Image 1 (cartoon, one colour):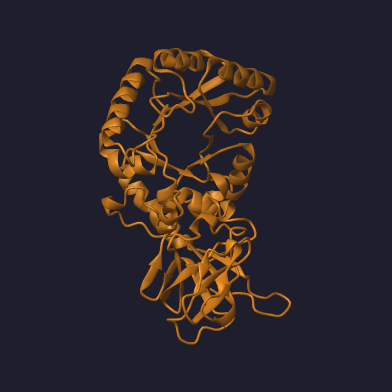
Image 2 (tube, rainbow, N blue to C red):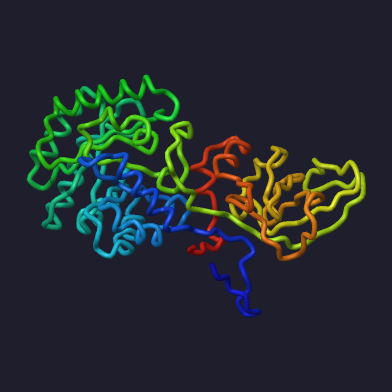
Length: 378
């Protein structure tokens, strides 16, 4: 990878390296896990989990025909980036009222939970002279959106029988496929019963598996026609014990801006939560929570990689800078590369490791990387 180096365009202080070959590898692996009768819907909401939506979609356009997003603006960005190769772009949650008319007119697909949503889509379709492409969502335990089991067949029938609507899919979502196998299997059984009772008909997609569902339970869903991997596409397994060959897509890096020796008794960062016990060589790095390196890593035992070695984080994470102990690394100098997420030499720091130390989840680590971090394609 070539980084800009002229005085007029100096290297970035904090950057994310995006490996599109790894992204395509993960998509191909997800396709294999899904099986020959099931496609995948690539989930690219939240700027493709912080990886850069246009670049991710362009790389995936030859790997999958479906994309899942959170809102109309994301749908439009996917449409532009896919270059007309997307078979469908699904808004995964309820559309805001003002989104419905353009969503229908522009040919995107909507998720519905209630009859009044169907009516709003149908009215917009009637005005635009097109049909609303709808996916009926069943609430089988997520509790966030979806129709209750007792009314699901009626919701499906309402869509199917409306001349302004197309029943394009039926769906549900797993809340705990990475934590509760018994509940997930029960969900699969209940959704299958709802599918059979609602009789959606030929040509209607059926989808329920997120990344954990795809990796851990796909064999138990032979009726599914789509799976919806998100985290797995970006190289992080929600079921690490499954041992699937996912490759991390994102590496987060920064630079050393200052190297100093501090005497015993010197305090570091806001709140003076760390004090040196003896002479210590420390490096200041050009990254902080303003870049998406979580403040909750303060005092957690987190490290960064410099010179192929783990260098402990010292004191609190600030908005633009952190301080690390480089006493064990020879020759650290200003401008050296420091790895926050990724591999350097024989060492690796994963998004999952940072998440565990920060008391959060890998999804938040990846989507929390801010816009001032430059994305560089590897």
